[in-house]
Amino acid sequence: MRYTLLGNSGLRVSELALGTMTFGTDWGWRAPAGESTKQFELFAEAGGTLIDTANKYTNGTAESILGDLLAGRPRSLRGRHQVLAQRPRRRPQPDRVAAQR
Image (cartoon, helix red, strand yellow):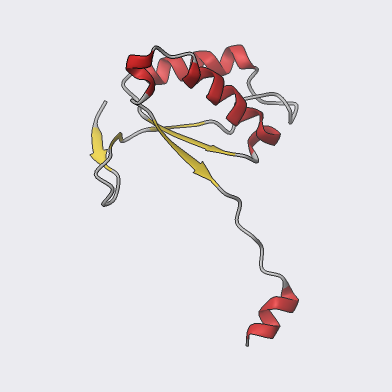
């Protein structure tokens, strides 16, 4: 695995990130917790450290699964991963846009 610095933060992260949008089955076609665990373990074993998640992924189930996976890691490995938690963008409301002009 190759690593790079994340912007000006000083954090050294893996060049590949694990996206957790597929963690959980709430949307009817994603990966159950067992499969999500396999994906996470393969990523971690390969040296991956950067993980992407959002509270909207599978109605929040992705964050819950990821939280359980990280909490279950040995203490010596817990600080190894950097989690990028996304916040959904607010769509502009036409009334507000017009009022700002």
